Image (cartoon, rainbow, N blue to C red; front, top):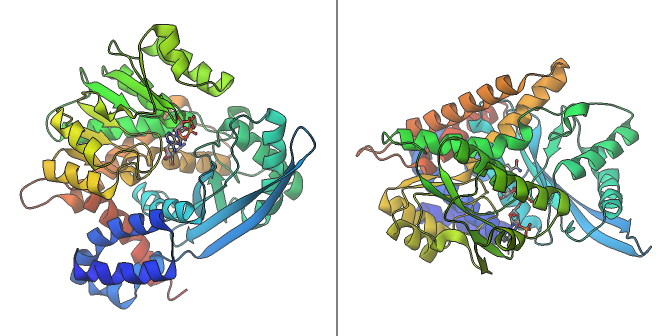
Length: 446
Ligand code: NDP
């Protein structure tokens, strides 16, 4: 490792002990940025890297609620307000039993760069709870969300901090959270994004991360005169991002052969077409069932406790969670002829896996660029809320498409190496950094 990176990481690890995912995310960025900062010393003198890795504010709170039996349950709530130099804090809420401070700090840190890349005025944040919505009744989810918002409301606002969804937080949860915020503040504002279409939501927001991820893959492929048409695609996850990535890939002529959940994956070599995808959407969004039921219904193979990366494909779209592709799986993907990895999830590839993709010089789009379509469309939802005017589906989709092209162009600008290879990791990290860093310098030591 570069000794300058090593020195910086010693500082980060000393100040943030035990927060492994946070260390991982910061190190990846530091590896891109430290050489860049050496060439641009104004960032060094202002100690931007040290400042950008320290949250502006961390809020941790108790979330007590009553389950259906009348028993008291206690969870922990968080909001990490990482950086507000280019706009109000913005980033999702995650409800999952694995949630802890280190995971949310990694997500908030990534969000700062991602939001900057979108070209929209949004700072970075992330939050959530170790609450597990799985197996809970709607009433339990509602009571939890109301309790969570009863503390969070004092820290957020449409010009201060605007949360959205993430793992375990979809339309249902956003609805309960918004209802409680409105009740406490007596204000109908765009304080959350991902709202229902009848009450301030934007068309295309549910589709945006998956569609954007697919548009980004298409842009990467176009640099090699290629496209998604006719390609075999492995997708992981079967939640919001995975569903709409599958929809868009299929629309563009690709064949999606896998989807998964935390118990295993299904392999459908004929492809998960529009009709089969409808079954998955109903299964996951309404019945809240397991992906295995797809295998039972369509008589395809189900791989219990396995991830899809053992299946031969042209394109991989990891759309479930962090660190879901390890070094061996990355090697298997490359060996099987995979030419493109477009990350819908945040940090789904381990550092060793990323190195495999970069060494093989395949098209590798890191999450902070490839999945930025979600937050970009959240930004468009905020714009529509401020104007009090909704845009059409076509208009929002066209803007999303334009933003993904612009993010890709930024990556190409900052990531193209002497031999012409585009290192999208460097491109996204440096491209996302410059705007935030310049704003921090302009605003002084705050
Ligand atoms: P959902 O909750 O809708 O879906 C998550 C999917 O991933 C489910 O299929 C879930 O399976 C699976 N999953 C979750 N945790 C694990 C795990 N530990 N191991 C294996 N599988 C797991 O979330 P989203 O689709 O919204 O989010 C997916 C990823 O995309 C996350 O990394 C998120 O941060 C990222 N992302 C999301 C954005 C958005 O707009 N929603 C924006 C940008 C990034 P199961 O049902 O079994 O839990």
